[in-house]
Length: 130
Image (cartoon, rainbow, N blue to C red; front, side, top):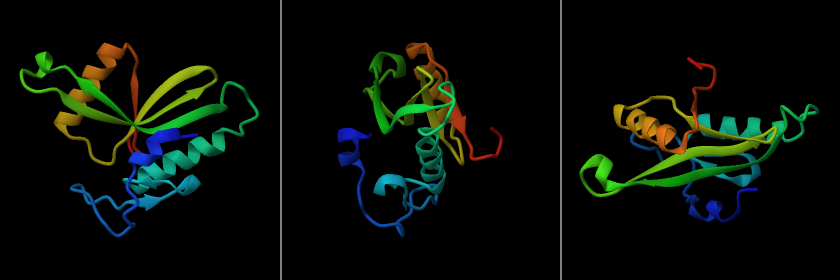
């Protein structure tokens, strides 16, 4: 389940676009996602909840998890970065960002998080450059 994080996802309709021309898309469990890529990944996670193999089975997942990076690293005010998905599969925690287009700022934030969490962050491209 997605718990209280769902309360932070605005239900504004699928015709609005973001700065990267993504369209908000309603996906599994009625959740509105920032892009079709994110909606597709969430659907895969839901399907993997029913995998026969315990190693492949997704126990839980959540969407849009915020992290705040301290100002000392960036030499200015703290910066917020939202990770698209965190889930548990086969007892292991996984962090994923669904990216159709990656920016230098996004890559920098991801590397910072990977370093400070000591956890790799997978970049899901929906079959393109995975």
